[in-house]
Image (cartoon, rainbow, N blue to C red):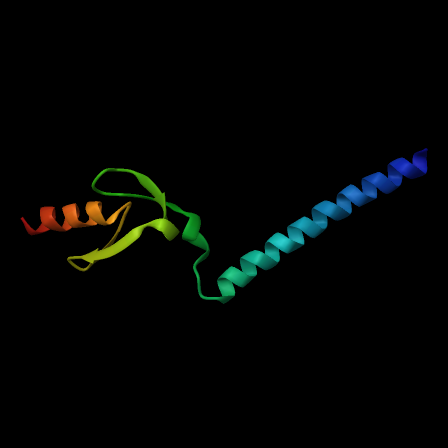
Amino acid sequence: MYRLLLITALLVVLYFLLRQAVRGLRNKDVGDRGTSLDQDQMVEDPVCHTFVPRRNAVIETVSGQTHCFCSKQCAAAFQNRQAG
């Protein structure tokens, strides 16, 4: 009975160690491709104040500054507001 519990505990520990190792390899692969690891960082749209992940944001440079928007409509509204 104790052997079964010990084997089960060891298998659970092994599972978590392997899972952690696989996650580490995935993050390393993302970094190796030149993709920033902060792609899942939430950024705020300056027009409608919606938060979107950086990887899904519409990124525009306006007046030499880079801004992240939730949509092309918000990007256009921001550019119109800056021009007018």
